[in-house]
Image (cartoon, rainbow, N blue to C red):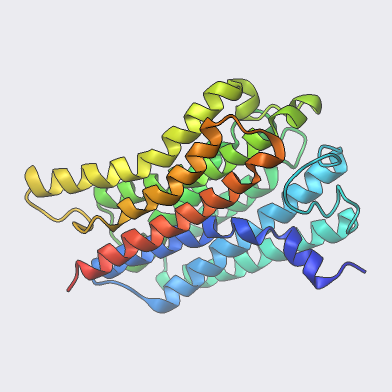
Length: 301
C-alpha cells in the first residue's frame, strides 16, 4: 500500500503556491474594494487548491500510462516510478476534482452567480486534458496558455468578482501578473524536461521554441509582473490621478528571489540542475502575491 507521505509527495506540494497566489491577490483586491468576505475566500481557496492537486495527479496518471514519466528528474511520479497503481492515482485525481466541484457549487449557490458552473466545468476539463485524453494540449505547446488563463486570469478575477460583483481594469493587471508567474513555473518545468520530452515526442512549448528562446521567454515572464505593477502605479499617480491598486511598491522585493532563478536559467543549466528554478519560481510567485496583497491592504488605511 502506498504511504500517505508518498501520496503527499505525488500531489507536488511545492506547486501549490500557484493555487494560493491568485486567491490571495484576488481577496486582497476585494479587501481594497471594501468587499472582502472570508467565507467566499475560503471556498475559492478550496476550489483552486483542489484543482491544482487534481491536475497534478491527473498528469501523473496520464503521463505514467503513456510511458513519458519513466525516466524523469524532479518530483515523485507515482505511476511512472510504480509507487501507486494507475487506477489509484486516477481515483485521487477524480476525488480532488470532486472536492473542487462541491466547493464551486457552494460558491455558486451563495453568490447566485450561475455562470460559475460552466466556468468551473471548463477548468476541470482543461485540467484533465492537459496531458489526458486522445489529444492532450500539453503535448502540443498550449500548456502555458491554459495555465496563464486558469491560474492567472480566471482564478484572480473569479476570486475578486464573487466578492465584489464588480470588474475594474486594474483587477486584470494583477491577474496578468499572477498568470505570468504561473506560466513561468510551467516553462521552468518544461525547460528542465526539454531533452526527455523530445525523446518521447512530447511537443511542449519548450520543444517548439528550443533551448535559447525558452530561456529568454522564462526571463520575460519573471520580470513582466513587476513592470505591470510599476506601470499601474505610474498611470494612476501621474495620468489619471487615482489609486489604481496599491501605491506601495512592496512587490519590487520579489525581484530578489526572481533574479536568483533567472541567473540559473541564464547560466544554461540543464536537467536536474534546473530543479531549484522550478522551486524558486513558485516561491517568487507566492512572495510577490503576499507583497502586493500587503500593499493593497495597507492602502485602505
